[in-house]
Length: 199
Image (cartoon, rainbow, N blue to C red; front, side):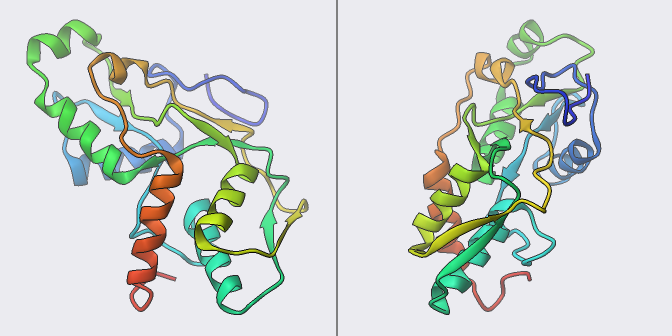
C-alpha cells in the first residue's frame, strides 16, 4: 500500500517505504542507531532544521515566515495550499527517546512483540492536525496577529500522512511533547539562534 493523493489509510509497518521514509530512516540510523537491524520511521521536526522560505519543511518555513512578518509589522502572511491536508508531527526529542527506548528493551520482550522480518517501527505522536490548524498554532506561538491568507494555487501534497504507532506504544513508549509545546521549544531555539539559522 503506497500513500498517495487517493489513499487516506494510516501507514502501518508493512507499508512499502517511499522516498521520504528512506531519508528519515537513513537519518535515524546514522544519528540514533538501530537495534537488530530495526529502523525507526517517523516524520519529525527539530529546532536545528532548515528555515529557508522556499525549500524547507512546513514547520520551519512557517516559523520563519511568521517571525519575519511579525518583525516587519506585516498585515498578512500567505500560506500555501488550502490548509486541509492532515499531518502528524513528532518533536525530534521524542524520536530520540523512542530510539533509546527500543535499544534498551530486553531481547525477549522485543522479539515477543515484533515479527522477525519487521524492517522498521513507526514512531509517531499519535495526533494529527490540519495544515490550517498547524499554521494558526505557529502564528499564535510566534505572536503574529495579522491575517492568514491561503494561496490555493500551491499544492497541498498528500491529503493525509499518519503513522500507526501502536506497535511502539505496546512496547511501552509514549511521546512527551504535544505539538504546541514542541513548537514553542522550536521557536525559542530559532530566536536564540537567529544569526546561525540555516536559510
